[in-house]
Image 1 (tube, rainbow, N blue to C red):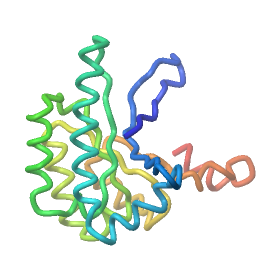
Image 2 (image 1 turned 30 degrees about the horizontal axis):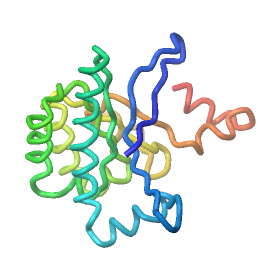
Image 3 (image 1 turned 180 degrees about the vertical axis):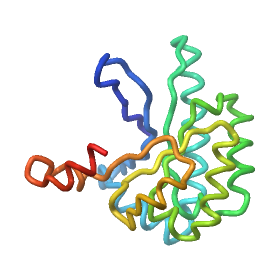
Image 4 (image 1 turned 135 degrees about the horizontal axis):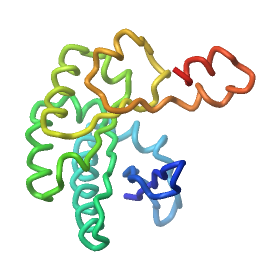
Length: 181
């Protein structure tokens, strides 16, 4: 598990971190998440991996905050299998209780395609997450259905635009208008 810092653009201060899983294989070296995450999803191991990431990230941020007298928050990506699994909300509550992480210091990241599949159940889960005091972020927005009318019905705190929206900004006025909005 590694942590990607999120820096406030105005102050230059560390704002939060995002937990990312990385695999350094002893013989093969660095293995890209693009290679091992799909395999973990196919085999169902992503649920166990995802729970470990959630538990470890919460534990690490609690220790970091105690050591540094801070209140840094952490974002954790969820897989579709983990998000839709029966018992996910119970496991999430248990993780918060076991680690003593304040719910407002946790942000759950989900993708828009994940939310659209079984939209009613997704909305129900998102509302339950928000009721716990946990923040919700939609990651990779723009790679799936991308309905703004659907998006406004979601109980989310943040939208993270996919790179495809910003890489052609100087040349593409339509992308620029969407990003500005």
